[in-house]
Image (cartoon, rainbow, N blue to C red; front, top):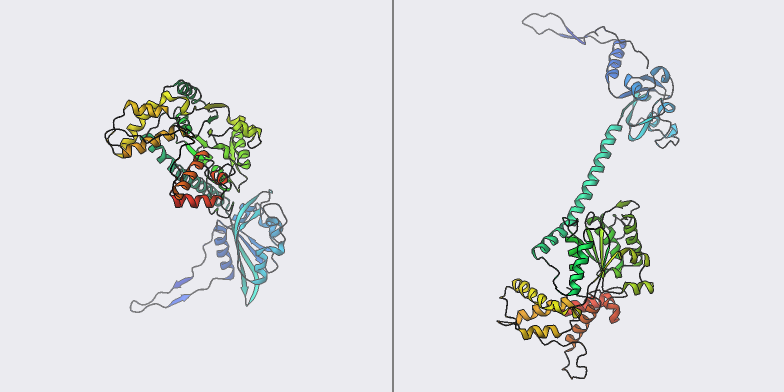
Length: 504
């Protein structure tokens, strides 16, 4: 840095007054400062500024460099004065690419007389480093001619860093807010489940073996594959696994893979960025992010598309996901429990399901026996349903006769525990003091018996309900009820709405 000498003399005052009589106001005389005094005063002002200042002549050469400019750039006035400032500190962009002087706004000011301003560029220091800069250049016009320019600049690196930190913090807050909003539904669901606590009920050998297996695997983070017919209680087993795990303080997140279209399922599982597809108007976090630190229950996992199977395999292998429309990977800690009523081993053999994903999910398989194979559990289940459903319906629990219980135990229950619960609820609605069960007939028990035909709408309703039960509530896809009935998805949904069929 060059050493500058500063004068200690006091400039002459601008205004002076002469003594005047007491009865009259003394006239005021203006004493003009000399050019040298004005120059000295302005120089002291410029030197006291914290911003860097360059004075340029009409040719763009430096005529003045204040101390702040020397401190910010490392270039002294002696090195720059009489030369173009551009090759010293403005020769390149931040990425190192050449910045022609002809494109520099500072020199456009000398040509057009218009003030230029920028906070998107950098100035280079003498040591080869650079800093983010905000600068303005203002033309000096004398008698209508541009005689030079004044450039004022300052280092805004700290300001930009604060802005970046603030933006990062706001982005994190937004992401956390989205996650909290998304989890809110599941927290309410968890509270409802705690209030209406659902336990696995049974004393049969099959149920005791299942309970023991659950207690073994629940404390681990291992994947569990639950298999069983529709209505056997696969979701209850998943809830029991979660409730006995170290993740029980977090709400378990549930996804029915067969209840939504393939195009929406990947977004549902992995989330998407804004603009990832036509209707993606804002970022959405997926179920895996919502279940971070908790358990994700994938019901009807056999209905996953090939693309979703690949992504699920990656999550299980790498513990990371990618939102649709994003190249960024996100680490997640999720314990996956999958369930299906279909034969996954057969699907693997028929190449309808990935073998590597099947073995990843089947770390600890659990199979739930159908109700017809554990009829010893029916009395406990019936009494449980009577108690809980009577409370739900606001009715007094009716008397259960042994003969009625025998009738229930002689039925094979193709719909398993779900069907039993529905039959008990129906009976509670129509019963008074004693439980009255509607006539139960096993399928194809009397194939030759003549029955009165149902009205067309009722027959259609029964047929659609039978198809839905067979497909475990799955409507779309090649294994859904629509394909089974030979109907488009939209047509089946329309018929269900007209007939008042609601999936449970």
